[in-house]
Image (cartoon, rainbow, N blue to C red; front, top):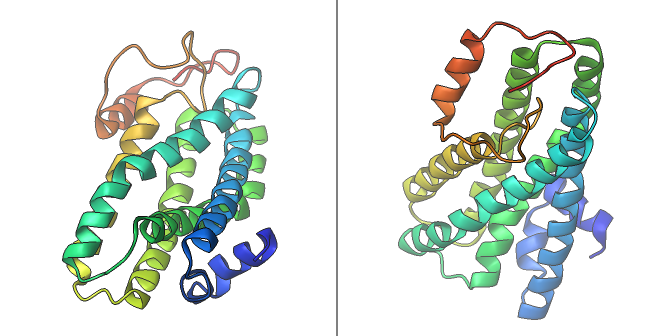
Length: 221
């Protein structure tokens, strides 16, 4: 399958990703295409978020969004393999990677679908809290659809116990939210690439909502 066929399979027919690609070589080629699609779409979404502050955030935000999402998936793949095995799936490592990556690719494709809305508000609003909340809402909606795809594909792989997979999905979503806080700021600006202080994501959200809105010239987060 080519890139367009891979994207179409993620959106319309996930069975093609799992049934038609049976050899390890085909699995690896599919993983490569999914990875490229995922990075490109996440980078586009990050670019639009970075457009809120402009300047160096135009490259910092895409980098953090793409690498942060992929890092979240990477550190959750071992637990996906273990939970999947406990739930009855008899799969190779390549298939587990493809399973997780297809869910993240659908997430990224949906985020690109929200891109025009993000662009409108990034160019017309100076509220950092609102933009951050909007990004979180779009991420949660997209990732839930992405994880729905993971469940569908897992059932094709003879998943017997859905509760194990649901637990993994919950863990993955928590990890993505914490990683987004660990690599902040994404929308606002700062003097350093990464934050100097550790924060739990809910603590960070609470502090940001309690902070008075800065002037448009200094959008720091």
